[in-house]
Image 1 (spheres, helix red, strand yellow):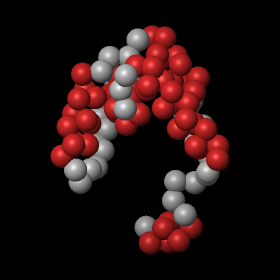
Image 2: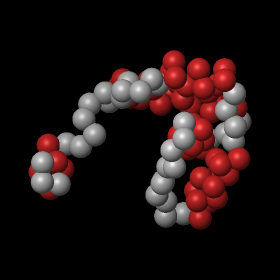
Image 3: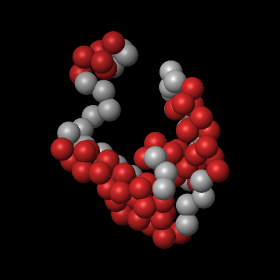
Image 4: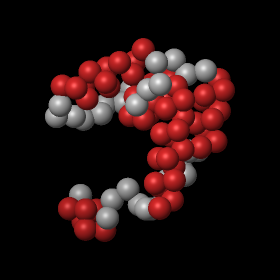
Amino acid sequence: MQANLRLVERLTEIAQAKGVRPSQLAIAWTMQAGTVPIPGTRRIRYLEENIAAADITLSADELAALEQAAPFGAAAGERYSPGMLATLGH
C-alpha cells in the first residue's frame, strides 16, 4: 500500500503543476496513449471533471515525467484479493 501511495503522490504533484486534478491527468494520459478509459462515477461533478480531461494535452516532457513517476507495472500487489478472485471464478 505504501509503495502505491508514493506513486499517487508523484502523480498528484504532476497534476498540480499542470493545474488539473489527478483523476483528469490519469484520464488524459490514458487517452493520449491511445486507449479509451471508462471511469465510473455517481456524481455529476466528477462526470464533468472526467469529460474535461479529454481537452487536456500532455507535452512530451509531461509524458516523460509520468512515465518516470509511474512506469507500467509499477503498482505493487495484485489487482484483486484472493477472495475477490474466487468470486470471479479464478
